[in-house]
Length: 126
Picture 1 (tube, rainbow, N blue to C red):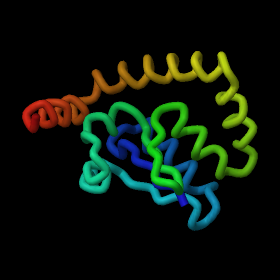
Picture 2 (tube, rainbow, N blue to C red):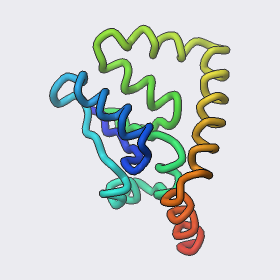
Picture 3 (tube, rainbow, N blue to C red):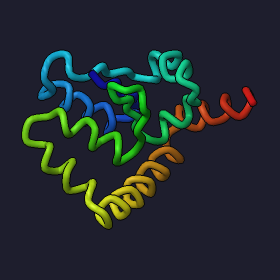
């Protein structure tokens, strides 16, 4: 089983995760909304703002994947989506997908108030 950490307050993120949850095989993924349960993410040594900025997924060996690599980890468990996971893992495609996702994620993060609040809290905790 993998564990996916996502931003449940982001409409785009929540809608996408709802879709994945619907099509995922039972017991394949543990879904954690870090806006409701931040401690599970923080216990692994991560800041909430990092989890709100990029999708994170922990594999069955305890390795954390983020961004496009986290999506690929999820897609490998979903029927018909494995082809996309394979495609975005190809050299060149992976780098382009990572850059595009980071650009999107950074813009989304800057626009959402709850993300900025988490960033301020994380800065204050240092």
